[in-house]
Figure 1 (spheres, rainbow, N blue to C red):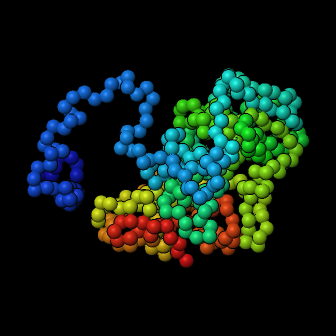
Figure 2: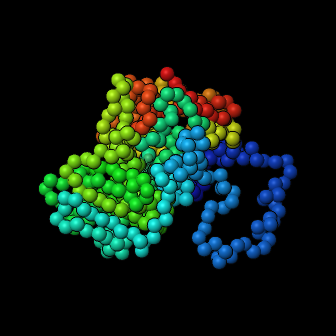
Figure 3: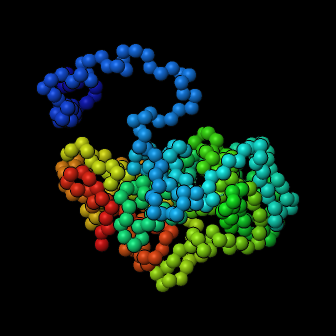
Amino acid sequence: MSNEPKTGTTRRGFLAASTALVASATAVRAQTADPLITEVQDWASGWGAGVDETPYGLPIRFESDVIRRNVSWLTADVISSINFTPIHALDGTITPAGCAFERHHSGAIELSKEDYRLMINGLVDQELVFTYADLERFPRVTRTFFLECAANTGMEWAGAQLNGSQFTHGMIHNMEYTGITLRTLLDEAGIKPEGKWLYIEGADASSNGRSLPMEKALDDCMIAFKANGEALRMEHGYPVRLVVPGWEGNLWVKWLRRIEVTDAPVESREETSKYTDTMENGTSRKFTWVMDAKSVVTAPSPQMPITHGHGPLVITGLAWSGRGPITGVDVSMDGGKTWKPARLAEPGQPMAMSRFYFDHNWQGEEMLLQSRATDSTGYVQPTKAQLREVRGENSVYHNNCIQTWWVKPNGEAENVEVS
Ligand code: MTE
Ligand code: CO
C-alpha cells in the first residue's frame, strides 16, 4: 500500500477521480494552446478598481440579467402591481434585497425615520405612540423567514402558463430580519382581556389593513427594521414593517403605522374581496393565513436550460413551509411516477427557505422534472389534481401544487402539466 497517494484517497477512489478529471477536461482540451491559460490578460496587466470607486456596491455588470421582472398583462398599471424575484438565477437561501420581489397596492412610499410614528390603540391599558428611536431601545431579535405572496403561482390554476420559475414562483423572498417582537410592544401597551385581534395598517395610501389573531401576534411576529443586516429597502417597507412568519405576504404590513387592538376581525377589503380562496363548489373560504409546504426546481427550468451537454447535472431548487421546517424534498424525472430524495443544503429552519440539490448524470433523456416538499408536520406538497379536487380551477390564491418542467433532449425546458 506504500504506493498509495498520500492524500488518503484509496486507489480506486483516486482512479475514479482521475478518470472524472479526464472526462470533464475533454470538452475544453484544445489542439492549440488556450490563451486564457497561456497569455497574460488585460485584467492582470494593470490596476484594478480602487476601493473609493464603489461606496455601495452593485453586482458586476456580467450579472445584469439577474433582476426583478414584471409580467405585463398581470396588472393594469405598475403602481398597484407586482414584480418577481429572479429565483432561477440565485442559489443558497437568502434573497438579496435588491432583487427581492415587490408588491404594493398604491406604490412604494418614501417615509423617513424622523417622520416615522407607530401607534397602538384600541383595547389596551395605555394607548401609545412610538418613534423610530423608541423602537431601537427595546431588546432586539434576529431571525430568517420567507415571505410568499398569497398570489404566488396563482396564474397556474387553470393550466401551465408562464415559462420560468421567476414568473411561476417568484413572488417570494427569504431574508434575515432584525427588530423587536410584536409581543414586546403589546406588553408595553397592556392588552385588555377582551382584546383578541389586531387590526394592522401601513402608512401608504392603500394602508393594506389586515386583521391578525392575537395568538399569532404574541407567538412569533416581529416589528422589523433591518433585513439582511441593513435598513429595509423603501420597497420592502422602510423604515419598519411587520413580519408574520409562515403566513401570507399580505399580512406583512409595510411602513407599519397603526396597531389597533380589537375584539373581532375588521373584515377589511384585503381579507374579504381579496386574499380569500374560491372552493370547488363556488363558495369562498374565510382566512387562509398559513402558506402550506411548497417547492420548485429553479434549475434546470425554462429560463435556465441545460447548456453544458451530457454528464453531471446539478438539479436544484427551493422549498418552504409556513408550518415549520422543511424535512425533505423528493425529485421526480418522470412526472411523478417515481421519486428520489434530494439533498438539503442545510437542515430546515422553521418558516425559512431550504435549498435542495440533486446530482444527476444526464444523458440527454427527456425529463418531466418535479420536486415535492415535506414539512415537519408530515404534510406533503400536493399535485395539481389533488389541489383542484378541493379548490376547483377558479382560485387565484394559495396554489402550492407540484410544478412540472419538461426538459427536452436539447436541454431547453418548458412549463407543462401532467395528468
Ligand atoms: N403593506 C402595505 N402597507 N401596503 C401594501 O401594498 N402589500 C402586501 C404586503 N404588505 C402591501 C403591504 C402584499 S400583498 C405582499 S405580498 C407583501 O407586502 C409584499 O412584500 P414585499 O414588497 O416586501 O415583497
Ligand atoms: Co401579496
